[in-house]
Amino acid sequence: MDDAIMQSSSSTCSYVDKDHSRSILHIDLDCFYAQVEMVKNPKLRSLPLGIQQKNIVVTSNYEARNYGIQKCMLVTDALKLCPNLKLLNGEDLHEYRAASNKIFELLLCWKCPVEKLGMDENFIDVTKLVLDKVKTDNHTLVGHLYNKPSTDCPCGCHSRLTVASQIANEIREKIYSDLGFTTCAGVAHNKLLAKLICPLHKPNNQTTIFPEHAVEFMSTLQSVRSIPSIGLKTTDTLISHKIITVSDLQQVSLDVLKKIFSSDMAVRLKSLSLGEDTTPVKQSGKPQSIGLEDSFKTVSVKSEVEDKFSALLQRLLVLVREDGRIPVSLRVTLRKRDAKRLSSHRESRQCQISPSIFTIASGTLTITDAGQHKLMSIIMRLFNKLIDLSKPFHLTLVGLAFTKFQERMTGRSSIVNYLMNDISVQSVLNLQNDCDTSATSMDYSAASPSSSTTTDLSDGEVEPSPKKPKKVTWIAKRRCLSKEEVASPSKLKVSELRLNSKELEKVSELRLNSRDRSLTPRASPAKDVLSDADTMKDVAEGGHCDDCPSYVDKEVFNSLPDEMQQELKAMWKNPSSSEVARSSSRMTNKSKPNTILKYFVPHK
Ligand code: DCP
Ligand code: MG
Ligand code: MG
View 1: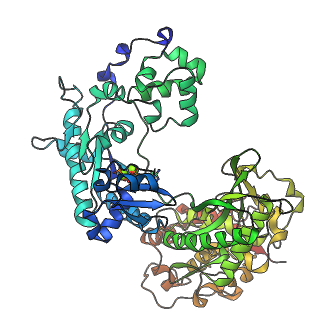
View 2 (view 1 turned 90 degrees about the vertical axis):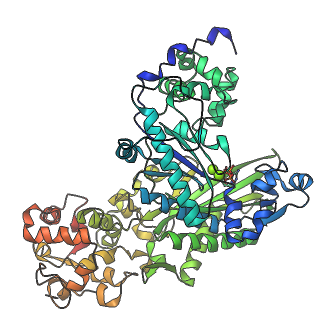
View 3 (view 1 turned 180 degrees about the vertical axis):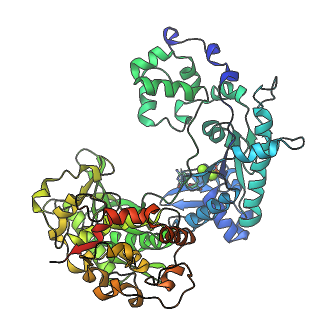
């Protein structure tokens, strides 16, 4: 690296001034896919085992690694190293995902923020837990320590990280005793160091690093690419400026970096090279999208593509069923090979789909044959838009993903959110009666999650995304709605609540759109189909809700989450202070887009 762009890193090593208050763990499963197979079939433990996807060994157990087998090695090369290698097909990720979810759920038991990172890794912020424990007794570090400390850090981080190492050990033991998996853990005061130190003593071990050794540890990383948030493009740019190792990055002056990158990026890169990272552990929820891809040599015939999609869809539906949310958007991805240029590129198209394609039976997401048929026709329609069938085509990958889901919030949030959430989906129904076609020029670009993905709203299977309750968007699409596509399963929530209450009486000139309700797929007949008369009727039989007004269906009330029951009770005690009451008072204001009004259609 050029001397001219180097500066001494000593001035940036003053770790004592930095904030070391957090205690972060990074936990990674050992040879994950292989372990899942070994837990399922313990006889495999003594064999060298490789997990094969296509012609690649994506991972292998440590027995096989003794032969020199590495992740993502060609099967042929792996077999040369270890002719006795037992190979299992790992293309169906179903069981790996299930194991991953079990581990995540187990980690939640510590009541600390857990951030899932890929299938076999999680960050856990144990700061609070450590603060509770650090006051008691003397603590001994568990596992390895990256370098002995020369002096104690005045902020007390050594003691805290020592306690964190005990918690890491406790968690790892629990994962092993409950689920049978061995893991590695990294313990540090930030995510970057915890992740990078984690694999230092593999397998089945853990390593702690104190902040004072961050700079030195980072300087041992050979490539800037080893830093998790430095991607391929940044790596290439750095390399083109002869910044290759993390040590190079530590030494290059910030001014020089600012000439190459934006100021923020330059500062971030510099910090990362020094092992500094302030990003929080963000509690993971459900994934934003659920997708599968299938890659192959070449497919050039439409019927073959259809078969590939059909097989993918079957597998994807299993995942969606497990997830439990109702998909409202579907993306199709193709990788096209350009035979002339010997290159390939991906293209995607997505469209919104009606939640009514799915049904909820006994709390489980299901899809009928007709629903599957419909999904296949949507997929092939998107495919037709991506491929000009009048010309030859060569595909090397097809992918399917459900990219948006209808939230089914319960209890955790205000009842107003519960309702609002529905409103965004529900409102499309109202557009049957309330249409303004002049709004078709609405800019839809915001709905596209990435530049490589186009959101196709011209498809028949349209329904507004729950997160984007833009009335005009729905208006633009309303002409495409077929009868069965206008149902909203979330509508059931309204039916369940039977908000045919005093609040609703305030807008007695409004009526529930009974046609919409009868289309609610999730609803049992007893609950979902309320006639106009029902909406004002007293249904006070059954249930144990002593505080309920007489017009409330007590059975339905009792089936609501506790928090929601409490919220309703509070509302009934003091209507003026409740969110719902506020919502209902807004109901007469037609200009507000997100009011409960959207559930109702004015009498004609
Ligand atoms: N995986 C994959 N393709 C890759 C890398 C990994 O399909 N290029 C899969 C197989 C792994 C799993 O992801 O089992 C987790 O990846 P890790 O990098 O954590 O590797 P392992 O858990 O297999 O091994 P290690 O013990 O090194 O963590
Ligand atoms: Mg792993
Ligand atoms: Mg991993």
